[in-house]
Image 1 (cartoon, rainbow, N blue to C red):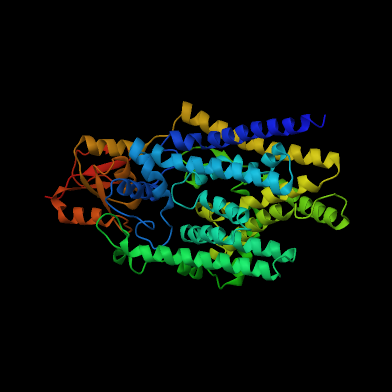
Image 2 (image 1 turned 45 degrees about the vertical axis):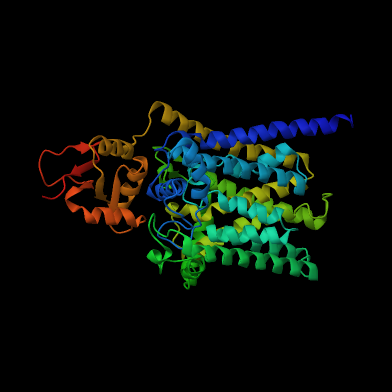
Length: 505
């Protein structure tokens, strides 16, 4: 029997690994395969950055038009574009790989550092592994605020004994998205709770990590003068004055305690149920092209009561020491819980209590809180009946999320939502329209789908300065793309949505 256990655990690990990969691929399938499922002009700008980089026309360091949001996704997509061409599929494939890698790392660290069996580790991690349709769409978004912060905070934990590498991750992750700092803050809190932080070695280690992070920030800003701030032919001077990561944090500090308190009530009352697929909402509010809804009025209250019960039960067991848990086994679940808690509170403060599903991407890390709580509870619960009930409850949530994905796939197979901007791009290319003017949410989306055979100058916000210059230089060759009928009679709507109006005489 003792000789069979390693083989049994090894077999379980293999099957769990395959199941995790399959689950992530399944939840991402619609967003990879159908370009209209979740793609907009913000993501199109990332695609254009990758296209320009792969063609050697530009060196994007930050998101075009900004001094923050490090262009990591563009760098990842550029070699894929060289192999497959600049398509939405090629842009999403690196994101799929990141989602798979992050899910496997999360499960693996739960196994190793918490001592959970592979199947239980995967079940605790299911809030990320099998995220519901709306959240999955966000995790597959090519905007730079999707899956990468999850990977960064996991690496900050994994590299806690290697401060220089931890600092490199912290620095790059912070430049990519400031949310990475939640991981370092949570690690300090965990180490302070077990008093490891208050030793000369840990203080020196934290200082070294911060120094390495500062070094990475300095390296990036030394490279910045050679980057393209707003597309081919531009420099950082073209985006001088745009917000950076540090100013972005300062701008988000709310000075209205009453609004923050009101937002906190909304946060715990219903909002945190949105990324978990529990609070009722149209999935289209997550920027997913679908007619579906997810959640139900009674799901989040039940889930919230279960979380409170879990916190009470967990604290009671730890105080009584009824469960034989090795020292440090709860550190990683505690770390995940604290990261999620910081993410939720920081979102409330940063938005000054104005919480909206359209900005749910800023609070995605909050789903790590139930992951940490579930893992800790599974690890310490000695009562077989309670443990079995927890497994059933987590499995029920996973089943609910799976049903949502099945419904989404069924919709795209049988009643596929229209791809209006693809029809518009094909129409413009077919009619040899090379220059156009329109709104932001149409312009860059269509320019990328047309592979820049059509370029748009956009009203208001712009990202690629070259487009603006080309259109401004040739007004008599520029068509107006609008959602309103053209002044001249006889023009027909493209896809019953857009009108392509002739250039001025």
